[in-house]
Amino acid sequence: MLNEALSQYVDLHCSVGFKFRVQRLLLANFVRFAERHGDEFIRVARVIEWAIQAPSPPQRRNRLLAARRFGLSLQAEDPRHEVPTPDAIGRGLFKRRTPYIYTPREVAALMKAAAGLRPSGSIRPLMYSTLFGLIAATGMRISEALALRIEDATDEGLFVRETKFHKSRLLPLHDTTRRALDSYLSMRRRLGTLDGALFVSNTLAAPAYPTVVATFLRLARSIGLRGAPGERGPKIHDLRHSFAVRSLESCRADREAVARHIVALSTYLGHGHVTDTYWYLEATPILMRQIAEASEVLHQGVPA
Image (cartoon, rainbow, N blue to C red):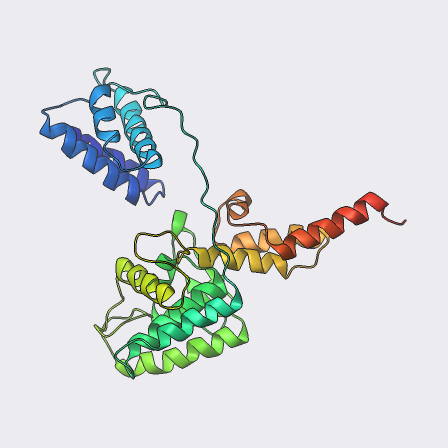
């Protein structure tokens, strides 16, 4: 019964544009857990028992809230389902992880390390070097980059097809980025594979997301960006944060220019709301200096 209800719940969210991948996996885990105990309806005690098995407080809270939303949906049609309160396992505020802002030198080092991957002379090192460079230069989501097709590399830029919230967008490319991509494309087209994916490895298919992340982590450790396995450090997604921050740093430091820039940046990143773009910004010495200078001008008074 719970499994069937979950299927309908997931279908409903997907039909209105949500990816719902993480929530689906979480709730499928919960449903298996509940059904192993013979539950036909959601029980508060079972939700809490399942939630506290997560390894960290944020993950426990994510479990609780996912199951709570599922329960609210089911309870609307059948009051036999129970719904836990949002603070059933304590009040916990989500803490934003401070993103790592890469320097241009670190991005170059990462790309150089990728270019040294084996087997040398194959498409694998060039593919990873181009992939990481493209993400750094455009702020694309890694999932968007891996989903690109050869035909998406157009003369006008990269065409990113229906990604998050079914939004598509065209990304104009800087001349240097365009040349690097064309260099990769010349080798990619010579492979003549049946798979039309833009980025392919030696298997002649697009690499899986976990494989790309594992390769990134290994390369990041090799150039000293990360410590030993298990230690925290820069992530591949931080390249997207870095693009947003470096882009803002290059904007002319006046109010109207920044306002226009943020709207353009939000569109370029594929965000539905400008507030989503603010999430990607982080204070840097350059931005703080610009803010201080603007504050000084405001304090002194703008001449008529």
